[in-house]
Length: 203
Image (spheres, rainbow, N blue to C red):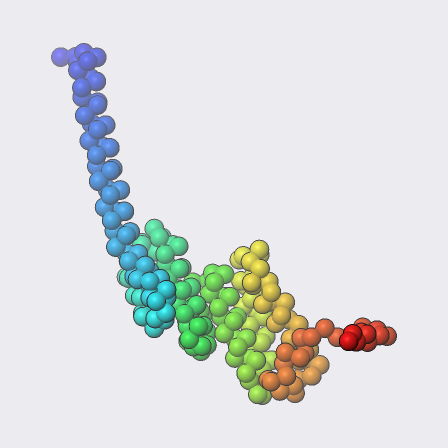
């Protein structure tokens, strides 16, 4: 028997409503899951505000480990995954754990943040190094990391500044490789122009 138009409507409308209800349920489950998965990140932020960097580092590491257990979640929440890694690197930098940063960045997904913090750690290692050759090696690596970060985020001002600073320091150190670490900042001062007259002293 052929269904009349009103009967067809009654059949179609409940099906559509059922599909919408299922979709709403799935979205709700995903939303609740996302909140649960992001809880360690929130706990890490709270620990940072309280000044407890060791606890913050543990929470960020827990967030990364949780997302690592289910690779699909890294695709669903890429910002949370990369954020858990970059936040770890930031905390480690505050704690002056430069070797840990370099090791962590080397095995983490390539991002502007991982390259930036690796560059910062390498720069610190280089500027405290006594051996001239080893110092150039650290700073060359730092320059490379800042360059990689710039390629991913060309407009980031902090990365631009660090990149140019590292380049200038390397240029000067190649001319004066035996400069002790305590005098490195003097190499970054602008050189006086030839023939320039000294400024007039006032007072």
